[in-house]
Length: 462
Image 1: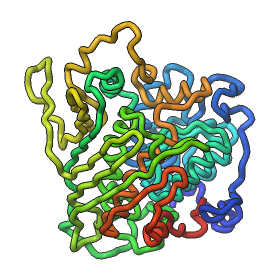
Image 2: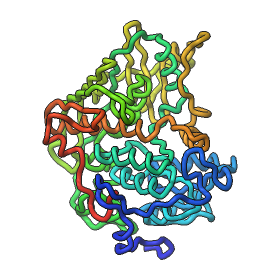
Image 3: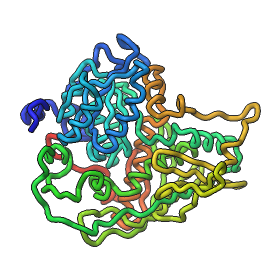
């Protein structure tokens, strides 16, 4: 153990952790940093945002690289980094610079009054707990997708963001990218007629063909803290890093990973977020979800290999389909006059009464057809949101400073995550489910209702 990295004290964790998810009382310390932009639109002592990074492994380190390019502007600063793996933590500390402090336990970051906001890029099963605790401590949050792993987590996350008035941007960054904006604007102005169906495709989830026995965790990894709210289990090298995505309780498979991109864009373009997660007091019609697929028969990984999910929305009526693998549609580069070789391409087709449009989602980039890119708005054309500089982080920063919602706010993130959670539940149970968006619950199926939440391992609870 590196003595320079603070180690959480178990007794202190018990005293400062929140009570179980779903309870009316939340016991984690709650305060608003005196110098921070602790609520959207409220200025602090200056306009510089001081950031802490929680989870600095693969994706988390890439996010640090993106933000490092913005540091010369002078409106950002790195103050802290946190990870349960000492090697990754040391690497991130080198990137953050000598002014930053390294922590193994994220609560030390949340207790610091000089930190305005946090970037959370932990494995998925930590998203709900970490975001709720950050909100309770008055920190704005950039949260990697997917927003949540269960229905109950999502409800608690939205409640925490509202109650503590923090700005949360979920990392489904497609909405901020130029060609997604152009596709949205093109469709919003009726160029396809009425869009009645969106069909998404994606390649299969992998199969664990090389299982290994349980073993002691590697030196420098705090395995208990990595598990956090999950039930305790012995360490196995096939659980991490990255491969947590192929385990249902920690990752949820391709639909919860990449579905958080493709279906986020679909809900945005179809203006359908409120059909999954209506505003308080608003009405919405039930949504049905029906999933079929194949699952592994051996190994540790248990998420769907192939998967077909059909979502039926009402008022307005439209159908969303997730096909895994589905029919891959190659992307043709209009400038190079050749097919663009995007590794493992995935995306969606928007089917209208007059025409259709393809929106491709590659790793870190959105592409669409030339007709949407070249379309020129006429006077009186409908405009849609455009993130500043078509940059997801800059949209979050502007939302904090201007007191507006970011393009992928926590409600949108939760609505998208609910699509993926409900699909997995339908597959596990082998039957169609009906979602009540107003009550935020599955109706007419008691077994499915019990699966909307799951116990969290004390004291890693929110």
